Image (cartoon, rainbow, N blue to C red; front, side, top):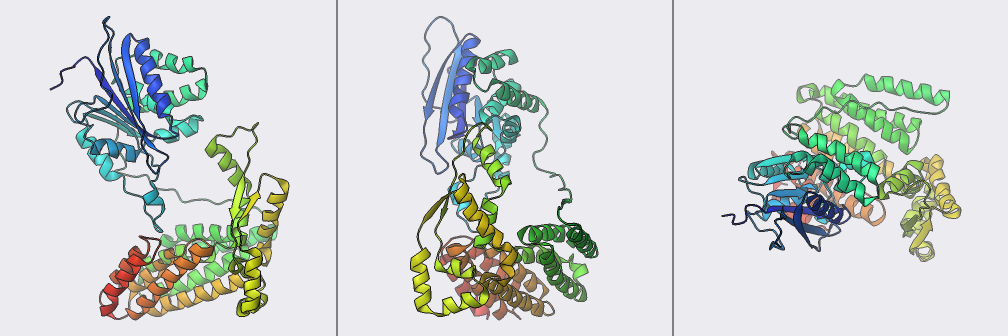
Length: 508
């Protein structure tokens, strides 16, 4: 039973860096501006996402005597719950702070990934839908939309969006003007904060649609290309070849063409389409149309991924692109008149250096233990390169320029041979086991990164592919390979994969 009906109890769940403290202060100031007495407390958390912090505010109309306020929220005794991110929303639900008889829940639908989600080699992102469903079921009112994107578009931070959503919800008996005056009184970032506030206020006032029940269709991407006239004509011819593929394959093939051209050049796209067309022909012969051309669709994606491998040249190229510098400045909020210091960390091994040698020289060094050890002692140490300075930028820019000779280098030769072996295994499997061939194509998602990460994930890929080949003829071969891939992507080490390999071993 609520023995303090006049006290409004509000909790804010946020992550470090989201401005939770600022939001809490704004709420207190708005309350005091409207003749309320208010108290705010914060409980700092030690989490892996820069610290999850709980803020708690209690307020009551000033009646001339000092009220007694609680220092922390209690389960079943919260009127308004503001969550700055979906996992924080879930944290509040698990603590029982949201109840259907009284709580207005205001949450942003974007995600800040937890460390446990980031370290998974595959897609470790947790599905937000169960949290959304519980939020709807457990709250009296549920207001949810992407407040982070509103803040970014406005050039502000999410605290301003949350404050606008709180005002728009009308859960507090204060006028919009008093909220806006609270922001103006800070004197810092007023215009951008008010812009985010206004958009979020309007969004909260609108009737909330069923969130994410009917996602919008993603439009077919259109890629603009630049270059000499001859290359432009070659590109158009390749796009014409792309248009001749089955319609269901074209969108993925178009994206693959773009990625491959961005990695190397237009001629490399020709190699990509030749490989893809060989898979499509095999798919058509074995009634792929009846199966929605699943083999061709996944091939369009993973052949491109295999051709766009992460070598030292690729890493240097990505780190010296203008768009990256612009993104970093935008992400950390560096203004145009401020100086950004940017340090890149590298730890090259002899393997990566050999990979940049011409194929013949690289094999010679790798085959000689003496030469290889000497090279490893020379290069195998940590390096810090300042790409905000001319010398450091030029070093990486020159390495990136080696892409014009990439086809002659050892790494490219190794990657091409490995890819041909993989595709031959897939195509030879199609006639007898179409579904197994599809899963063998998907196995390519195991290969990631460069240096130690690439070596580790490539080892997993090779073991899963060897098991897939042995499983030919097994009734549940496709399901077994699917389970092997899922196990391989659960952890960085090989524990889960080894257990899964032992489980499927009796099948072959």
